[in-house]
Image 1 (cartoon, one colour):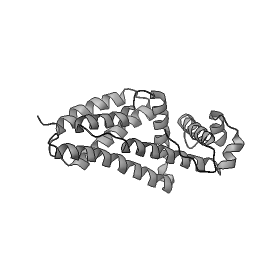
Image 2 (cartoon, helix red, strand yellow):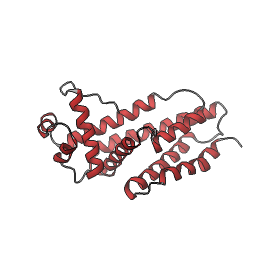
Image 3 (cartoon, rainbow, N blue to C red):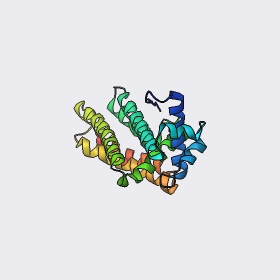
Image 4 (tube, rainbow, N blue to C red):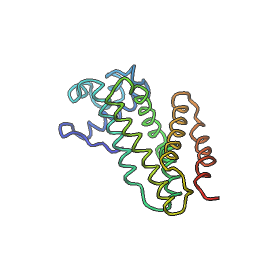
Length: 203
């Protein structure tokens, strides 16, 4: 996760506070989150939190911005190549993580989904999540359309197919994070292969 701190905040302090906020959100949830919960996860003093941010809400919004920016950078770094391979890799990234930092992936994802569950009460967060959703769906759609144009995939509505993929990913992630159904992501990955990839690939 790449963080780009404001000039007024030392980078080390900024990264520490963002990571502490993520960990606290994953453990406490947003509704019960307090500054001292973030402080408990941080290597810095609580005074620094209050010095740089006007309470938990501003720090949480900043953390959400960092998370969304990190996803944007991942999407921008997607390599060119075989559309089937690329689509599978991007589905795995969104649904399963990279596999190299599994704990960090799920801590980050849990924090994102916790904030998303409360976005109906925060218009700014809702706007940020809608932008995030559009980015992800459009990214899948672009890859699918590339496959169609190259004759690798069947003719389908690329946006509707991308939206279906995203809906499956979201559903599986909610089951794992909110209901403790740890098998849901892998089960959904198999379902995507059976229902989506089989529909895309010429028979």
